[in-house]
Length: 125
Image (cartoon, rainbow, N blue to C red; front, side):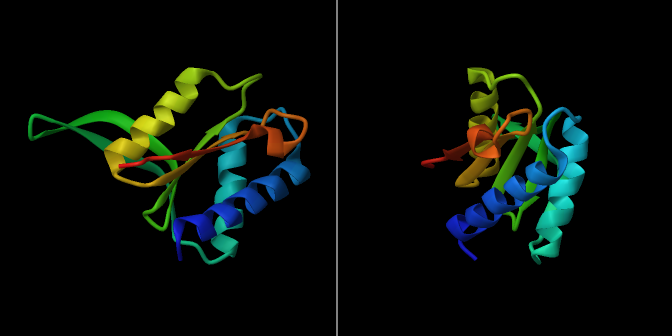
């Protein structure tokens, strides 16, 4: 399955979860429901995946965590905030670079319409 095929499923699943729950919950609630929805669609997902940092050929466990990793190809960063900030985009771009994944999504569930809370991010390696 390609990153773009996975991306379509991610967007559809996020919209489905948002329609069922609406805004105003904790990020952990959306993460659990979205993980369940993605598993129902037969995707290989991992939650809260540790992401080490490599510096001068030394691997440092500095505590970075991917909210959801799909098929070892696509990263999801979930938020439930009033508005997304540039630092949120910088975080997921850093995660894409560190993981060598090409595609990520920044998903803010604290919006009236989920389509307004979806940011597709690409790592041009």
